[in-house]
Length: 141
Image (cartoon, rainbow, N blue to C red):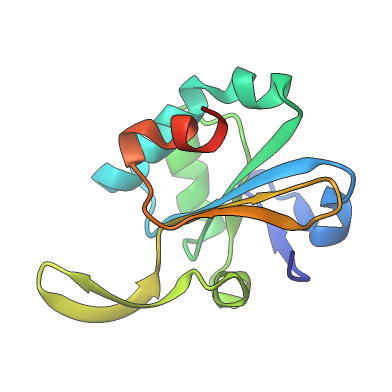
């Protein structure tokens, strides 16, 4: 896991050091309150207890501001932290920032990917093709 320190919608700072000793799901998504990102977040929300029961911490990650995350999490009752990475430092370190095609146009931005880390903060799985409506099943089956 790359070294980082980012703030969530609750104002709490999180670092890679705090995640040592826990299994962690870190899902990178392009933008709060867009259809795909909302479907993904709500699927994870609806299965959140399963993640907890299997010992996972779950974090969303985007370049959106803390204020945007507050609105998004509140509107959809998301119980997990959404990390704000406006400088896309962690996104780049994870390989979740780059060129993508949207509506036929090339742009640079967040690539939707999910990263699963073990207790030693070693990445054990990367999901490059996220099914936003079934993201939880892709992660924990």
